[in-house]
Amino acid sequence: MIEFKTPEEIEKIKKSGRILQQTLALLRENVRAEITTSELSSLAEEFIISAGAIPAIKGYGGFPAAVCISVNDEVVHGIPGTRKLKKGDLVSFDSAVLLDGWYADSAITVVVEKEKSDEDKKLIEITKKALYIGIAQARIGNKVNDISLAVQQYVENNNFSVVRDYTGHGIGKHLHEDPSVPNFVIRNNGIELREGLCIAIEPMVCKGGFEVCTGKDGWTVKTADHSNAAHFEHTIVVTKNGPEILTL
Image (cartoon, rainbow, N blue to C red; front, side, top):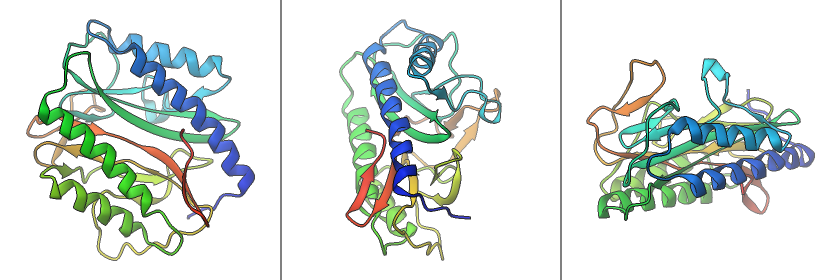
């Protein structure tokens, strides 16, 4: 069931979103060669707790950390651990914050220290721009498929692919709510966007094919062809004045 949020509820999601963006900024500032992914996750967890919020993905479905940290060919749900990052690694941070009973969800992808390769640079640029192209379609009267079509067309016109097995989603009192927000067109997905709808739009883009597989840890999702992947995400709300990003 889709739930539409009141202005008061949207303000609460926005407060969670501010803490989350500060958390991602902290991770961006501290990512470097030789740091372990568990050190970065601990840094994020300490910050979220110090801000009076809860690291929402820790324990969610059994996930053991405050941030999903996915490296190179890992698309999403990477578990932080003893792995030391290297110069040139492509690293995606995906996290969520719960404050006063309301969730916000966001993700970014960065490169560790070294100058980006032309291909990685383009992958990041295309994924980030695909997010904003999708957000621009989140307008009253449009359909979820308008978001999906815009993201898919932009990504594929640039010779990359969008992951099919994982999608964006509604968000609010729960981390994952209806509707699903795919990054590709689904037949008959004519859910109309209305004022007060809060959704997380999150293109996951691969250099190679869109097929993915889950690792032995039961969580980490990798590209099947081991090509690199990038992931950007914002929580937004549909308003009469257009889409508003709540994770800024």
